[in-house]
Image (tube, rainbow, N blue to C red; front, top):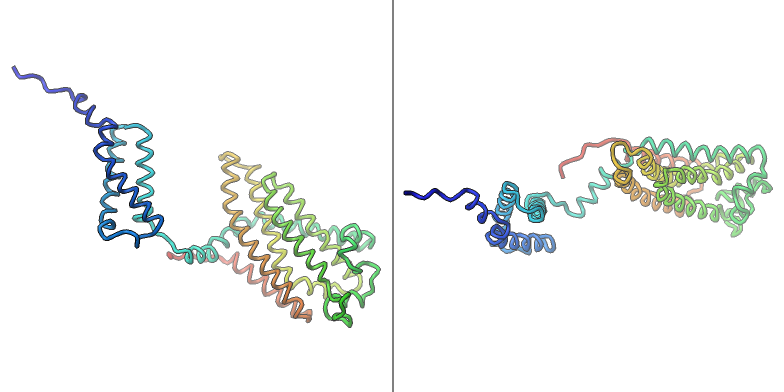
Length: 346
């Protein structure tokens, strides 16, 4: 009498147990992991010819192990390990790795402008809020000059207040009789204050965006207050156009950067308030990636504004030329950000 064949489960059980499976294939996984580590740390030049030939073979062997592990429902820890190893191997063996130069090129050509375009609604809102701050202080100072002292501290005004003469105020703009005098050598103190103030408020506007965007909007409103007061002062003396040129040469870059920083903060705040189908944490995280790219650009813009303020404005005293440079800078930023371009394959 012929004995019955052994049950399928009897044969399959030991053959596909986790310990037996590991014993047969773990050496390949370890070898593959070591090659990937060497490739990550030192690049392809660190691998010998034999190791380069062995790399795709071990990759396919790992994929085969993963396929069997999934089909036979082996333990979850082993599946996770093989999936992570396979994914890591895919990116290192077949993935396209960019050089640092290419990453920088991609950021400046595509990622940064795309991030700014993504927050265009927030940019408009913040620009209107800052304009409201300028108009508020302008209106108050124009109707009652005593309001000026509430918006611009005396130590920063340096004599540039409602009691100053038009001649004195004109000299502080860099093209009056006393332009070379030490005590009236221009609005250097106020300019330094304005730049430092705008930079600090820009960073705070972004950092406080998570608080539903409310502190961000308040800070951006406050940012326009001192500027509007100073504009109203010079306009009251018939020097509004000259003061505008003094400000315009660097202000189109500096204030644009301030608006973008507020927009980045507001994007995060809006994501927290209106997360949609996502959790608030996930929505804030997604918004933060876009806002972070915008803020990298804001820092660069502030550096450019500092150069324009420190050199261009002091060396160029012609008001029309100041307006011209400021206008060119504004058009360059608008074109750079909002003229869409097709991303190339590099």
